[in-house]
Image (cartoon, rainbow, N blue to C red; front, side):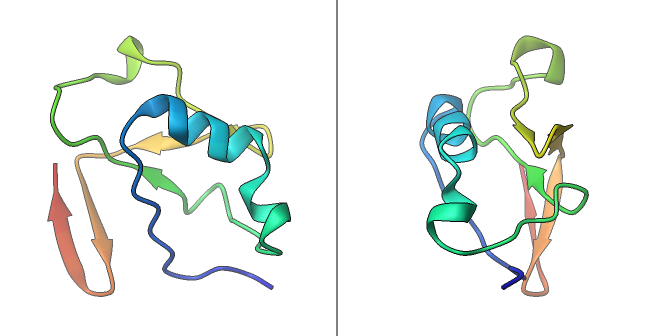
Length: 76
């Protein structure tokens, strides 16, 4: 099964890395597309060079300033 429009809300980068590294997708029988996966950080002003961006299937997850989720634009 492929996932469309899934939103994971996590409280810190460590949780995100654990979710990615612990194969959240395989445990839940979902296939993520790393090219369409985005990371947005709320709160602290972090830049890409300040954190180790998680990787999914060998590809780095993109950090963005805004995302569109179910036709709603969410800004950082």
